[in-house]
Image (cartoon, rainbow, N blue to C red; front, side, top):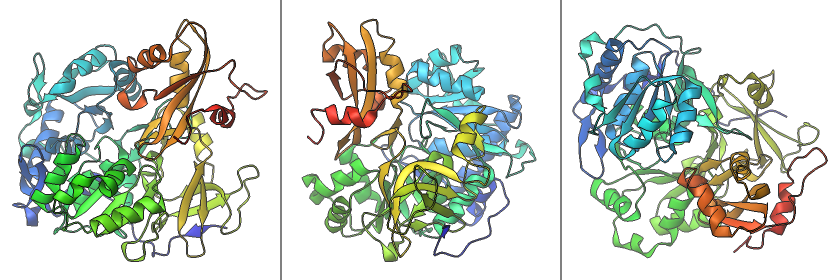
Length: 518
């Protein structure tokens, strides 16, 4: 049985992403588009448009050809939006990178993506330079200043010299974030202009963002969630975005009160803080119209607790990097806490038996498959992984176990896939296992996610080794991966349970977890 949205389908615009996002900036030229939370530095909509064109002109002057890739390795800043849409305006493709990545992780992504230039921030300049040296990047530019690097402002040319680039929205890649998908190491997710334009149009049918709204930009822009709902949707609809380079609860609350934040896009750890931290009562958050939570499941109890505490609706959405990302959102006026809501317009779904692939009955569990214009073009240089993810009829296997009720509301109840979700970030067990096995004293290893109320899941390793202490294993991994990938626990075992084919039996490992549920 094919499931469809209760919302009528819409006509998807056939335009490049930057044109779509900046289309109405002329009539709101003096309105603040982006405000840097810590400093108050402001870019108006008129300035945003001019700077995007100037950035495109500068890239063209440096010889950037349509289809070439530029990396952004930076926390949230107002200038991030300028760079992102400026690269798109020049016909380039943006590969966005988690700024906590190590030089090795950054270098791998830049190399896989074939990035020609890299933009970074002062605090990450050393890592950026190290990674660029081994990945074929031609030049690194920095937001602000850093010794030995050219400032991003040097890329700003004459707006009138912005190149005229022919873009086919259905074919031309605009973004290349990296995702582990359902398994394995991170892969480049090829997202076209049409993918992202479609997902903004689909999402805004249920997320009512207008020129009167002020949106907190705490979701990382490198992540597809922040990229779509803030860099694209919020700016397309004329909202003012207040950016934060990282989440700090005190500053987060101060900015809400100072700017009258009306919409907050969040992840479960932030919602948990809003529901439980006493400091919340010291601030006026009465302007908030809704909080939307995504990237990891949010329980009904936590959703309702946060809603009662804040006096506003707390809704959930669902999606993946591979789906641009949104496929489901709970309608504001018909919210069902604990569910991820209903399908977006132009989106179809099936829930199928994991073993047989046959559709299940309403109310029964099965793997969620989705189809729609927001589905990626595929994985970069990896047709096998693409074919394993998307079938010949366009159905994408999410790897998540879902249930749908009689009213078309979906709940995510489990995962087929092995990916660990730590505070909304993807942690591939295979990557950590490969790293552990590089240690001379470790004979075998298996990694699982331990359920945790605040983080969602904690990466925990089971290790076969002699003469090692847990702290030594924790330190070994911490020195080699981004902070969100660090192990949060180590347990020593005699052997790693595996199937006859050699596949790690993670459910058996979970039974051995002495600290699960603590």
